[in-house]
Image 1: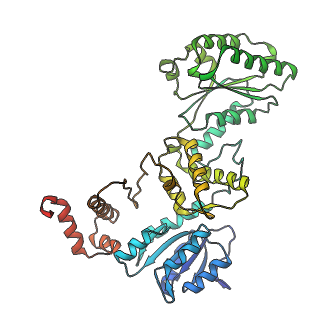
Image 2: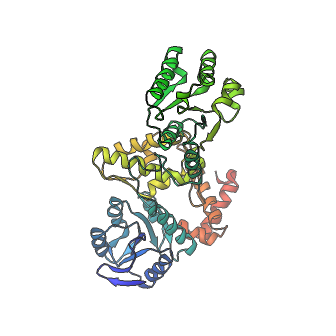
Image 3: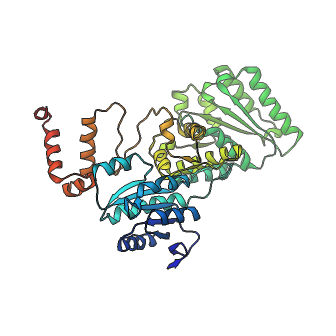
Length: 438
């Protein structure tokens, strides 16, 4: 239910995301509030810059909808206050112009809407912010057994870990570099109840002496503490020298009673039996290690985990350095659109770099601070342009993308771009006949 209080119109529910609507047009503000109520949002109203500043000083908001032209100033004047508290900002105007659009694009905005706003697009903005707001708060070491995320793929991985952990089965984990194979092995150890150590060796650097010592230490520990055996993690198993593969296979086959509670977990970047055909792993060792196999999906296939992981890494840094830095909605949107060829490891590195480079408590442009080797994924409402693209090509792509977004409705496209319909036709003619334009 909508109620009036000291801070204006609001909805009673502490669990809802919060929305501040800054507009002196009462009918528009009420209509925008009614749509947001169905999500639902806690809603606060302000009719100008001064009143909005007061609202922002007294509370935190997840989303702020601001009219560009207000009785006592420009809505752009409120953007710094909004970004300081990591609020998503959407600018609204009934009088679009190229100048206002360019100015808006230079600020930390989630979107730029033209009145009368498209209800479907507005609802999509509300839904996106609400989804981010409803993510469980990240905590250092958070996630079940340290596995952080909310995607279906992450849930399946967690279930597999829980099912195999109490057994004696050897486990073979495969996935791209940086997806978290070692973390998954540690999760298996944590969920197993074993009180022994988690021992790790990189097979690319393993020597006969190192491998022999590792296995002997693990067996001795299991013998000394019956029922408390540990886990041996063999990373990059396909890099193990052929002679050492034979030694490992013999050690596994010649098991003794005190080794029964000793878990072997191996990892490789090769999927399935490709670790044999392409990776050089002995077939008999492959089947011995792969009594239970786990495939970890790359981060690009579980985009729902990106925000949770980014929040988790940032929370770790905040706790370590006693800070309160936060992402803006624009920053999370940017992270979500990146393809992450280096997977979770690359995401962690980007968050660490962005944290160090952020001068205040707000992180707004994490990808702008690093060398981006892959283009951002485009969405129906966004355009990705590589550095060095000519202005003419940027103009052409912006025009075609906007027309596509509005279903080739040239009137709506012209309104969004702040130009006349005639200008749209002129530019279409120019780009369709480039020889005639020069």
